[in-house]
Amino acid sequence: MLYWQLLSAWLLAACQAPISFSISGPGTPSPTVLISTDGTSRPLDRWLMLATGVELRYEHWKGPSGNEDTIMIARFDPRHIALRVLYSPSTPHFISDWLKEEKGALAVINGGYFNDQGEATGLVVSDGQVYGTSYSGFGGMLYVDGQGAIHLRSLSQYPYSPGEQLQQATQSSPMLVLPGGKRTQFNADASSNRRTVVALDKEGRLLFIISPDAAFSLDEFDDLLLASDLNIDVALNLDGGSSTGMYLNAGSQRFGVDSLTPVPIALVLQPR
Image (spheres, rainbow, N blue to C red):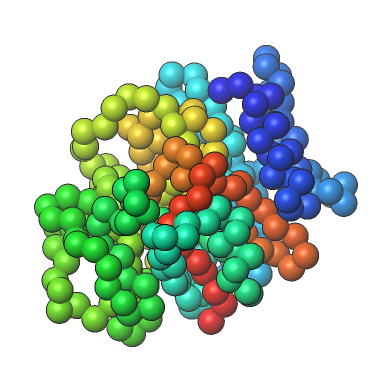
């Protein structure tokens, strides 16, 4: 990874949100602190409480190929948050713009895959309205059931039924981790790219995870997820590359990285 390219990306984000990043240069130790614009330094690998049930953490990950990136991880207690899926094929937005539109949102991240017309390649459920067609025999689905509970499941293990009463849903592929923390096998090219992952840990907390630099292949990133201390129970790959983006609100501050292109599917968290 080119550290100064990453530094430039984070400083660009800082122009939109009051946050900057302390990044090491080539040949220097890994970064260890997050620097706020008020001059306050915080440990890079510690959870920061942004709101009730909302935590943020940055970690420096290094793959077996030697590629490195600073990973942004958000963790949410489902007792204190509500998940919505936003879908707008005709008017996609950058992640930063989705955040501006959703007043009071705690967090926004990009969703699943879409085609050149902005239409989801799998099923989307937005506020009870169903769009598209479910994947069959592959991929996974993040969804909110009729009682408001958040779930993440493999569609090969538990196919979608049109009779399901879902409030929200997005589908993507591949599943990276099956329930119980079991590594999956999948066919993916070995190219490195920006990554977006949604997961549930073994305590039932929701995780949004992004790798903002094109540092890891999907296989590498899957291995790094399971080697981390995030205690992941189940995980799904979301759309990556230029779609990858996540922002969190923390009062007067915003933390995050914007997508490089507008996206028609966004996952938004609101306080309960």
